[in-house]
Length: 272
Image 1 (cartoon, rainbow, N blue to C red):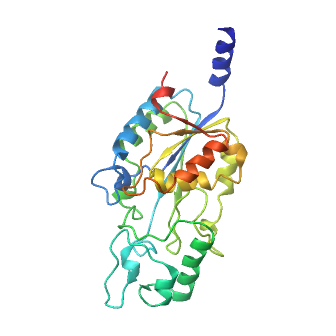
Image 2 (image 1 turned 180 degrees about the vertical axis):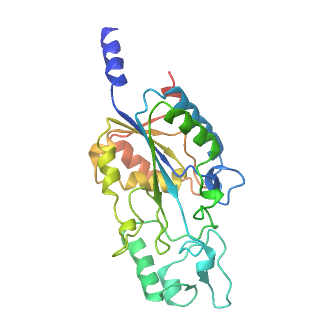
Image 3 (image 1 turned 90 degrees about the vertical axis):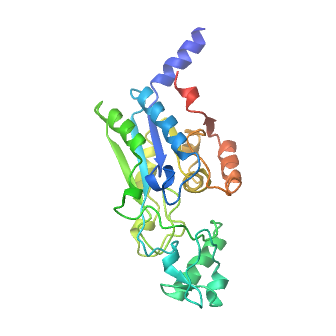
């Protein structure tokens, strides 16, 4: 009993940060343009945890996916020989651009190089998404239920931070730390050292967000070079969901995280 009480006491005094990936209207509301099935329930569970654990969460960082309309992953950036834009969820390869099957809005050679580097560097295939999280739009806003919980937490004299990502239209930006392919001369696409250094200040890092298959998984993957951070991770597996049809896409990423020492828990298990 004494040992258990001592361990509980030590846990209470560990510095905790909560990282929330892309819990925005377009992902989390059924009316959103890229709705992730189950996301609204994830938001409810996470918001309840924030309210219940206000005193033990020392910092909250949110990421916000933001895009221009003319974005390399949006339909309007592309057309085929007939002038037709690709349907959402179409995948486009570098050889399809080289052959003229798909014609990009931007410089063809640079786009071919970008798509080739995605494959060479083990990133996801290039996918066309519905227009989502448009810069300044309601769809890009933090979803209201979560925002209300954040506001309650912040009224206790704390400050949350929002890390914007995705505004460079020439590269995708799934993970929180860097673009899928950082671009030369584009600082906003390079690895976010400040974010890494901030996470290193905390003993425990809670991770939640949308979508589990994409932006959460890639945030996790981008931490693999920093095993000391991975060992501090507590992944809230009931506060994230997959994009439909992509349930198996990131299994290997989560398996590697577990092997490196990340813990997987439910928000319910942390309430008491």
